[in-house]
Image (cartoon, rainbow, N blue to C red; front, side, top):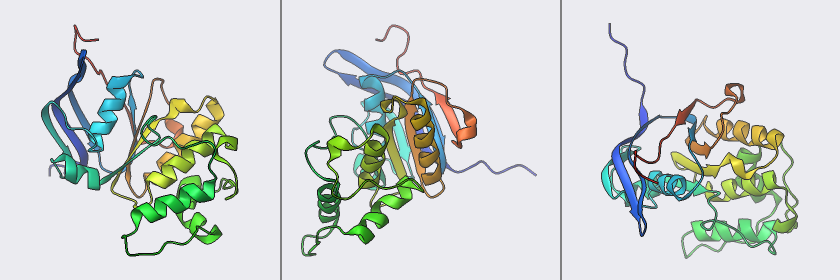
Length: 226
């Protein structure tokens, strides 16, 4: 009896992206299984960022075929995914408080005719506890500039993930400079992978004991590219 193939979340075949200065990534083939945390091992730079934006439906590949959660069109992929912790895309103002960010996100998510009151502790727990796990939440009244690197990224993930779509794409774990905090971040993303398909990136090898499903080397450029 033949074994059934595991379900797939992302299938990319020959996808490419170009910019004003030429090739950004590709042609690239990629297969990511459904569920769990997949870590793409790739060098930092515009190619890696463009690839993550493509997987989350924020950018259309220049060529090739891409299927994400059964969808092929960028608009449908967009609705089936969340994108978090990408610099210059979801950066937050340092001089605002956590409560303001949470409230703003909930108002953005809600239909225009719903009145969303200022976030309280109960709402804060609902939004952020799945991402922070047993880690203490920063005080609602704290300014973002006072948050640690780890808490800042976890907050950005929580705000991007309020809808809990099937796919969650998270910038890269290298944004956290402490090795210990990187391990915490990977464990938290792996925990989210119990309910979603989660994709993130790094340059380095990641200890498999941290709970990720797989780490996939990604070669962003063909020979002769950047």
